[in-house]
Length: 120
Image (cartoon, rainbow, N blue to C red; front, side, top):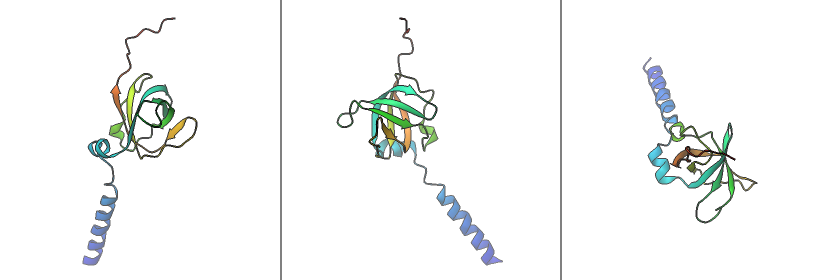
């Protein structure tokens, strides 16, 4: 009986540790690669940003997945014209547009000017 209880407690501890690999926002901001860009399009599962980082890939369009690993790290609503910082795994697919699939967080750097009237 004691062996059974010990086995069950061991399994519970192991399962508890498996769920502990979620990165905190402080860790993500301090340690993960990031790019800054302006939102050009907002889709259902991704956004298209114009990258404004110094160095490569400055000035490129990049599709960024909205399936972020840290759900606290996704502000909403994302609006065209927002300047955002995308924290990701460091891998950018060299396609047209560039693509980032593994996203840890997306934070707002500068909001779009929502008071501008778009009159033609």
